[in-house]
Every structure is written in C-alpha cells, then in structure tokens.
Length: 290
Image (cartoon, rainbow, N blue to C red):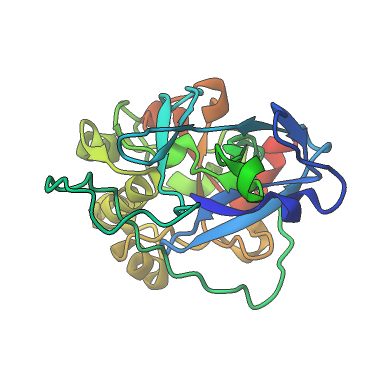
C-alpha cells in the first residue's frame, strides 16, 4: 500500500470535498514488483486505454475503544473484502496524564514504514492491460477532517495478484523448443512436470509463485538444457530468463507470465492452466488486441 496527498493526484483538475463519494482524477496509480522483488509506484493517465478516471472516496469509521479508523474495501474479482486499520495522529487537547484507571490501554498495530528510494529519473513505459486494469485505489477522508483541516489522502492498494493463494492446474506436455512459441498466438504453456512440482503449494503473492516457477524450470534437466548459461544462472536465482533482444521492449527484457483470462475478469491467479509464458513484445501486443 502507498499513499500521498490526493491534491497531488488531482493536479489542480479536480476539487476534493468532504461528502463526495467519488472523484475523477487525471491519473491513477498502481504498484508493481519486478523480478528482483523491488516495488515501484506507477501512474497511468485516465480516460484512455479503458482506464476509468473515477476513484471512490471512503470516509472511515472510528473505533472509540481502540481509537483506530477502519475502512472495509469491497470484494473484487480475485480478492475478498479487505479491512484497513489506520492509526490517526491524536488531535485536540492533550489527555490527562492519568485518569485513575490502572488497566493497560489497548495496543494499536505498529508499522514503522518502508524504505523509499526516489526514482533517478521518470521512466515512461508500456504495461500489459491486465496490470493496469487491476487498479485498487481510493481516496481517504479522516472522520474528523473538517474540524482539523486534514487533507484527503490518495491510497493505492496491491492488486489481487499480490494476495496469497494455492496453486492449481495440470499444465501441458512440452518438448524441445518449449519457449519457441512464447512470441506467437497464445504463447507457451506451463510444462506439466513444473505443474506437478507446484500444484497444491501456497504462496503469499504471485511474485513468490513466479520465483518458484522459474526456479523449478532451472532445476528440470529437460527444460534447463534449452537455455544458455546466463539464463540458467538467472533461473537458479528465481529470475525469469532473458528473451532475445528483438522480443524485448524498453526495460522489459525477460520472459513474462501472462494470465489468459484476466484477473480482473475473475481469472485464476494461481491456476497454471490460466498461465502462459510470453515474450515482452508479444505480451504487449496481446493486450493491445494485435
């Protein structure tokens, strides 16, 4: 999850006021994770490519017992309803040092934050349509915002592809030249021997699954012999092998896993029969309808 002042996302084109249920923003954000586990915050222009500008506005309910603000996000395809707890900064007159009650106070969840590194430069790239359509974002108003002048907050939540799940599916029999079709039509299927290794296992995120997938490919003698030494080394580290230069696009240089039925359309995140291996170029072309 990542948050920033909603006024920055509005960029002067929208006014956000208490009482609103939705706001049209010129840009919306989402979080991606690369093969090395590094997360990035990305922004996409709305009104083009099927990206809706409408972002819901939530006003949380404060739990008087714990002092925490609570928001329940509705269930979406691939993910159940989720509850977010927010520990607001105390406002108003300072409470007395002691009220005579010796019972311990309720303990709030503690999160110390995550290290953030500023991007060296702004990079413009093309993402698969299913990634962009997985947008999970909202605008937060603190319950007492009107009294204390707190700004609205724009919040991005990880998409269902980053939620836990159990692997299913049987895969398909493959032979020599397994990835020769990664740049054609539906792409290359999950090999049945890899499906046998992963089926039934549970993963905390699709990133963790992806790492295990390529690790198992690298360990399989029949599949690994189809790769050059540099790609064998990458797979031993859980990284996707590099595609040929002509099959890459910008910084996207490695083979990618594609959900045949989009997650946003309730396609199985961890269903190996719903997964294909594609080159970056073909992945982009598929989602462009080419």
